[in-house]
Image (cartoon, rainbow, N blue to C red; front, side, top):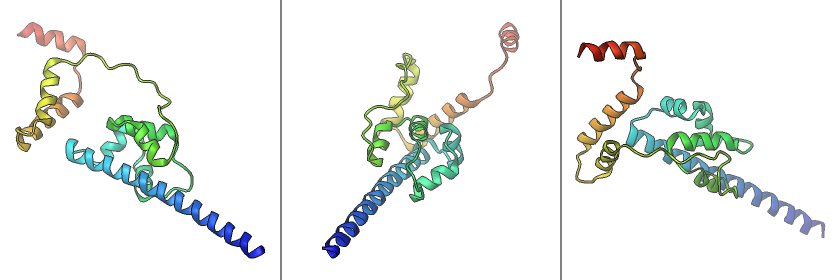
Length: 161
């Protein structure tokens, strides 16, 4: 009987380890794909992903390697997903969490400018060349992150026109 208990304990321990490893692999795969997508579509480096998500590069690297002893913090997972425009429930599923909604409730996005919609359509249009898509992304990136002029400077510039 003692042998059966030992076998059951070994089996249980092995099963838990396999489940934990499977979850780590699934989450690492999710993170790796998200990073690959950010690099391919937005030309973001690991530093840029970290800056936009608020999750440190060290943490992201640990997630990619599956090098974590306890589950990632839900808030960090949500921040990572939101920074990349991903649904956190996909990450939760990879982690084996039964959470259908994130803790943060985001308001509905403001209406999209028609010109921005047109640019987004061009970015997903298979008939648009990769070179043109690259230029669209670079222009958007430049406009999104250029320093804004103080209101007084803008008014003087408008008066000079």
